[in-house]
Image 1: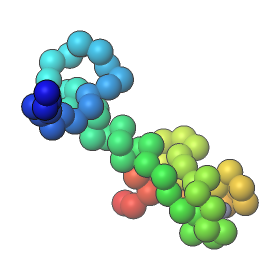
Image 2: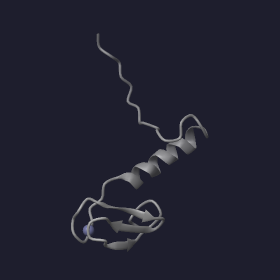
Image 3: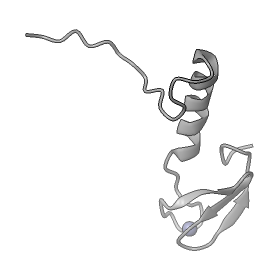
Length: 73
Ligand SMILES: [Zn+2]
């Protein structure tokens, strides 16, 4: 029997709270925040956010300022 699968984006992280709009926005921001990035210095994929606006590489300790949820301003 063939399943009729609807395409759904996963809205994970907030449970059933806050209503649909904030959850969608949260999912969007969260996806951007947690996506894998390449370090511009050494090319390692361990590049991520250290604090709000501070992006750093865990391998070579390269630090760069960016925006809150993405490296680009
Ligand atoms: Zn690096």
